[in-house]
Amino acid sequence: MGRSVSSIRQDVKAISERWIKTKKALKKEDQLYAEELAKMVKMHSNEVFYLFDDPLEAAMFSLLIEMLKKIDSLENKDAESEQEFKD
Image 1 (cartoon, rainbow, N blue to C red):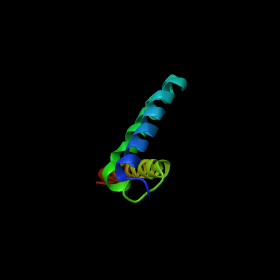
Image 2: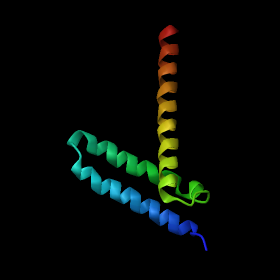
Image 3: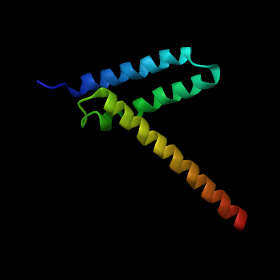
């Protein structure tokens, strides 16, 4: 029998917690980014985990979605600033 959704959710949570612990081994300036990545992994727990069998794949998919959203947000802010400058 395959994994249940709650099991994958628990595995992704464990991945996120390991990433939080790992941040202590990083340089001080990188620790904030490690914490942010770990937080991003958890942001799609309800939507994503139904479709993946591999918790690492689910975690990475969640992370990439959040990173793309941040990039899009920054690009939109940049475009708005350019528009205000032109007006």
